[in-house]
Amino acid sequence: MAEPWPSYSSSSRGKKKRPRSPNDDATSSQGRTENSTSLEDNLIFSDTLIALQLMRTQFPKLEKVVTQPFILQSQLYSSVKDRTQVDRDLESLKKDRVLRVFKLNTGQDDHAIMFMDDYLKQMESAVRRSKGKNQDCSEVFEWFEKYVLPSKLDVSIDHLELVSFSHCSLLSNGGDARDKHITLLMNAGLLTRQLIDPNMYWFSIPSIGPILKGLTQGRKEVLSLLNRRKYKEMLLSSLEKTRLRLSPLDVRFHLRDLIGSGQIKTVQTATGLLARVSTD
Image (cartoon, rainbow, N blue to C red; front, side, top):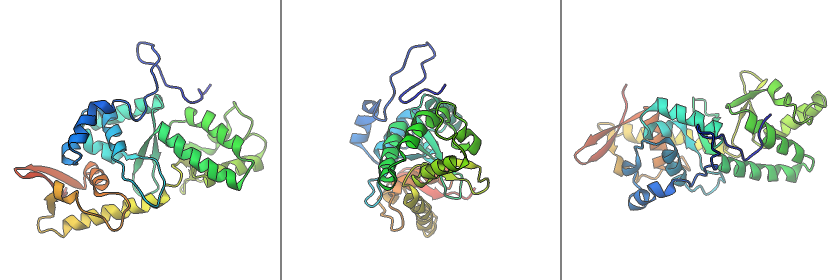
């Protein structure tokens, strides 16, 4: 039986753990980030959760799009070098329901990580907008939050799984009712139907669409900037000060992503860390 929110797994000793919020352990890195917020001084970490918390606090302030902070999995790979440990930690944090991972509709293998508290806030905003259009949708959103999210931790869910939860008869009243409720979830931005298999759905972050366009364009803009340089390289400290024209996200956000995906590599020099287009 699925456990409703908030519920977190116990530690290996059997003691209940307090749900970890995005601000936990902030004091361990607060002094560091207050003294220097440059990417060069805050690039590498040994702890996955601390890296996630720092990147959450550094999420760009967006003017035209309202979204809670999220971290790309590639960004995490740029900051914690042991990818096996990162993947292991993410699985543990997902099981503890501290965070959730989402497949992004960018045409690439992009995954976003969002702390569960932030995701529920994002979901609440989407639900309020949907309720304004449809007064009969409260029950389906409550069912989705109480049963589907805690039970299904993967990035996707198939149609049969979606309607097979026995805790609530909401989606078992016939095909028309099921389709209507799934459509409500899709319209709210909580589910996205997969193009390859229409019986599969991605869990999604509501209202993130405009940011995805900026993510793709920003990557191209940063790489283009470096490619125009004679040696296709630039000091990270100088590159970080660049203002992008095509993305609402800042350069630091894109640099972490491009370093983690291997499209940019860093080289330590006497004058500082150098960002160079990867030729591998």
